[in-house]
View 1: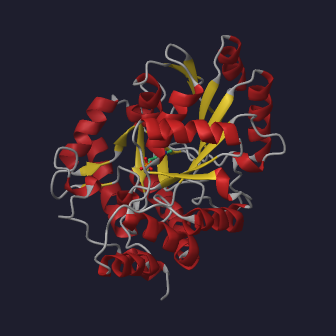
View 2: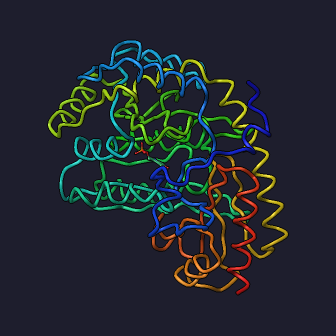
View 3: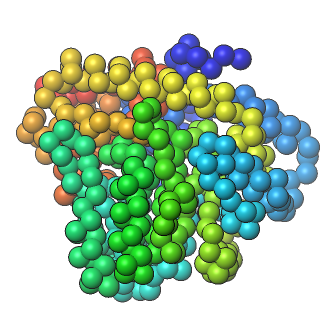
Length: 390
Ligand SMILES: Cc1ncc(COP(=O)(O)O)c(C=O)c1O
């Protein structure tokens, strides 16, 4: 099968499947164009569907454990695609990256302590910290005149001086689309190591990087953080988030044991039969689908850039180095986020409100998910232009 433009242009009808993106009426009323939550409107790779169908055919769905072929598939994929070498004991499986974030906060910090994050960033980073009685220590990213964001290491250091011992990084970054470079990550790691601060690197968007950029995992640094946990998943890459499986990658055996103990304590188990079968297939037999997808999304970046310039010339598109999410500065139109979002709803388009990623750093911004057929993206952008122009 060819995973070319026409394959991805065809998309897939998800209405009526309890799709969070399409069917949650409170967020996306019928007829609206959804450009919000980060999953994609493409059929997943046929090898995944086949693996699920084969497993479903065998009418035995009892308690199941993840075996070496499951961790092995994760290891082989990360070695092949990202040059990360891992031993079997360095890979743990868990239901979702967000459950991993929460366990990391539990194990690597204490109630009352601060945890460093860099807004604007994926909303559940805030909740993973706050819900467990820790404090968010924000070191907001700096936005350059070209709209490209960089890390504010001085601000990170202020928090370290004040005692922070855990940081959560989004690599590559959702929503600002940065693919952090090796030098930036080495500098961050050196700083964290000076203060004995642990790092959790959420690398769920690792596979969505556009040339000439190259994804750099924290696990490949010359001097990685002394305490490092990487969270990864096939869920975004292969569009199987509904199956709920992710991986925790950690070279520190004692830390890995603590993570496993914490997962057990909370009764969090991986071993969903279908998620295991689908993830094995995704990591072993779907590279051609993934390569086709990245080529399509790369082209969609251009479609988006061109359409925004034409329809909303005052909107500033943040350079997209990675992810299928566009971070758009709408401040020139002088609307509050509340008003802008309200108008979007009236015009029948659903982007993600920028403030989901940080009250201050998201004000005036919208996030647009372009992981969909280009016809859907263009229809949504036309409605967005109508919304803004009133
Ligand atoms: C940075 C980041 N981490 C985690 C998640 C969610 O992962 P999961 O569904 O495995 O909890 C997302 C989803 O958008 C994300 O963007």
